[in-house]
Amino acid sequence: MSKEEQKPPKEKIILGIDPGTTVMGYGLILTEGKKYKILQYGVIHLKKYETHELKLKKIFERISGILEEFAPDSVALEAPFYGANVQSMLKLGRAQGVAMAAALSKEIPITEYSPKKVKQSVTGNGNASKEQVAAMLQTLLGIAELPKLLDATDALAVALCHHFHEGRVQTRGRNEGWKSFIEENPNRVKK
Image (cartoon, rainbow, N blue to C red; front, side, top):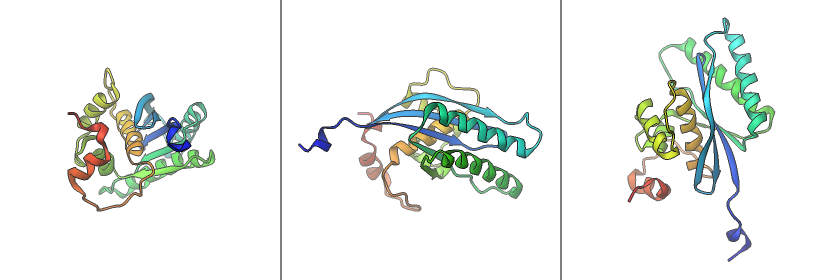
């Protein structure tokens, strides 16, 4: 056995972010090899701020505070999905950009995942509902009681998706099926 094979897996902290302009979810997990557990999760309430600029300032401050407190090794964000409302997309993109800037200011690597990729990684179904994602996370992470706002569990799903895909080349449009999914995620298959 080489020295590399004998070393215990390194602990890593991953911050997952579900960007929003009314509510932004965040979730932190601690990983060690294939093991993972929740450190903290919650939401940043932004509705009370009158202007978009104030919301962006609050996002930067809160994400910066989380980064200071937990010093994550990486940040994973859910990419905005394309909707019919261009103004909403623009505001959501700005919110995501401010969260990214907070991480970049601390030189923390960022990875972005599509909503479909996050859902697929956690539930096996890229079209799963927020409730289905939350229910699966309740099982995978041992969450006793789900929060009222599922933006927090969505953020945990982003962090877990990053853990499952860390170190792999991200590609779009590949459909390798269940066999590939099971090979890549043996710890998620109940026997």
